[in-house]
Image (cartoon, rainbow, N blue to C red):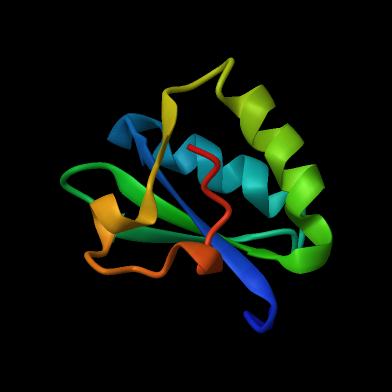
Length: 90
């Protein structure tokens, strides 16, 4: 999956749910790329191609009903991160 034109969203989650999240996202082939930013703190990133932002927003909302998945502003994860590269809505 190319990251050109993609957005990055950061989340804090319970580490025990990481395998479940990975399993669900694998079912949506090429809709996002899951990366672990800080395993100890349970911080992950989702890189989402521009054409899938609405679909992923809906999926994230649905997942938040099942597991702890709290969106983080990018500057809380990566200091001095430019806000335009992310999908963080506050």
